[in-house]
Amino acid sequence: MVYGYARCSTDKEEGRQDVAYQVRELKQLGAADDTIYIEYESGAKADREKLNELLDVVMAGDVIVTTEISRITRSTKQLCDLRAFIQDNRLQLIVKNSINIDCTNGEMDAMSKAFLQMAGVFAELERDMTRQRVKSGLKNAREKGVKLGRPEKTADDVPPLFLRHYPQYKEGNLNKVEFARVCGLSYPSIFKYIRLVEQ
Image (cartoon, rainbow, N blue to C red; front, side):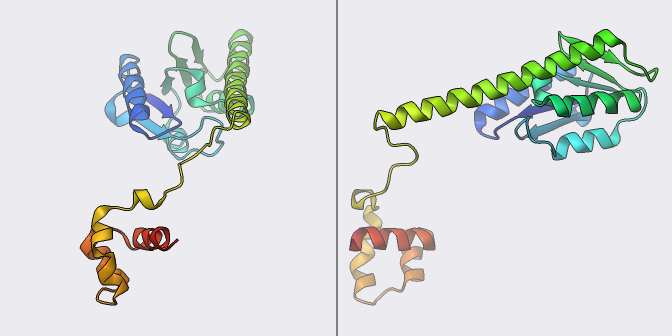
């Protein structure tokens, strides 16, 4: 049986498109819709639900396919653990256009072992460099006075419908629950807008 593993760090729309692209490639490698495991987690996270599910169902002789080594892990230690799992369980790991580790006979040749470890080192290096670039970019932005995160809301952001019903609330004709309902807003939003207006 051929099992596929697709992963993205985000479940935002662009992440889903990326996973869809991976799924197409996994099908080209022999996986089917019901044998592809899709995960939205960081590759550095050790305990990933879908990867664990995949490793629980594979049996001797099965094949695990993925599009890049960084999809299945971004940690050298995790990759070493995976390599041992593949060998102990007599599996085959295929990383598209780069690695084909066949341990169905219970052994792994020295060249495959070395190549897999090198690929893991580069995946971890790529993750660390990306993290460093993000930190550096945030630091530079702060030094230039750029405000990061969501801009704070002001009284100008208060919806007109809230302002229309606010006098009724102030006169005691509406309680906060009723105020939220007539404005079509959540209860926490009503508190937030009341605070903004009354400041």
